[in-house]
Image 1 (cartoon, rainbow, N blue to C red):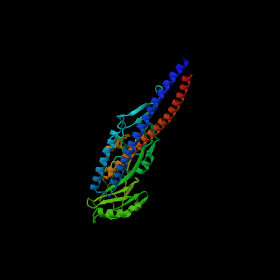
Image 2: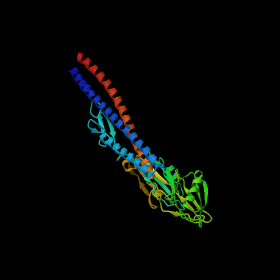
Image 3: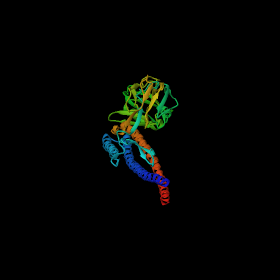
Image 4: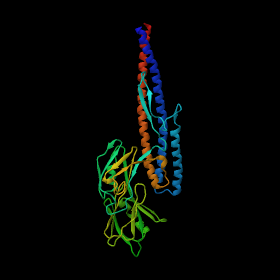
Length: 397
């Protein structure tokens, strides 16, 4: 009787192990199916990022960007199609419906391994963003000094401090990595309006990261453009001038302050405005006062796969109005991006980069789960073989 009981228990275990091995095999197949689809999603995002970088450059025409955007939109649709049509045994894997699923990988109850699959469609993956607001050039650079505390992903950063006159570059360096996964970039772009004439020329100096250049006898936009281009390398800036529209701007890709000083006679007829993190221009500030210093502070763009928030006096003038003491990130998804303008394309690069990071994270988790399944199957087979041999000995007695 005792032998019969033991034999029956072993039979139950062996049968259960056989089913558990099959279940684990299904888990491996699902992981491989999902990983293969996510690899293709990553390939698509890389193509989209390449298109965004091409459109972010200053050389493409409006028609070129329109063509790039047509391909970009088609790839966006394909990204969502992959997410909604990737299935295993009739069950969708990458449209968000799979969630966290337990796989029974033992001969007894609750011996499980969990697998989590998220939504990787174009209207779900993207970046948690926060962009600096518009600050017109001013004597203090438009910033309110004070501390900023960054909170996100269950972490609280050490306090960083913003001071009046700080450059976007310096602030971004403090914010970069303040919480896990947070990326901060800075740039300073200044647009010019020139109404000076030969009768009343403008005189002023521009200082960038310690390099100073004087502009004397500026009589027109084209004249200033020529002088800026001649000194661009010294100042470490790029110059963009459209002779047709008379649009003139300079840009520090690293986010340095652009400091303007009126000359002896003042810079009558020259005005400057800065772009914010979203590419919108501030109001124009005149450089008319002789000897006056005007600081153009750059823009900061924050991106992360996780949500985050900021609080403290330093938030004012940077991520909100002067009186603001808090700001929260907002998610921008891939489907809400385009490459029709250089500014939009720059933002698309940020969003796609975070989307790739999010998918890479899922793929890493899948790899770890698949390794667990592989180890589990090997162990279950060993147990099953030994249990079968033991049952055979008992039954032979």
